Amino acid sequence: MSTQDYAIAEQDNGWVYVIEGRSSAVFASREEAEEAAQSAVKNRAERDDELEQGLEETFPASDPVSVTHPNSN
Image (cartoon, rainbow, N blue to C red):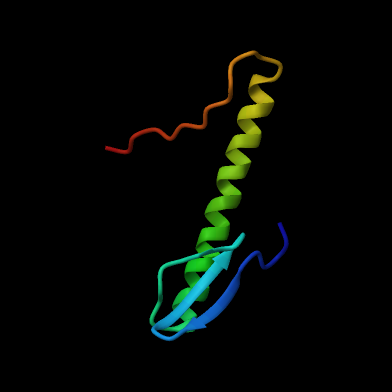
């Protein structure tokens, strides 16, 4: 992914970010949409890293990889 993997767009009722063609919920300000987009991109990168690590740790194997998160109770 590049340094900016999203676009910010103005709508009649606020601002949204768009990642891979999918729009977010509407935000009241451009700054809020920008912060949410950056957070979404970061979370996606972390999930991709976890999946990649899971693939490396289980290769070769016949079972599909499953990324799980421990419960934080």
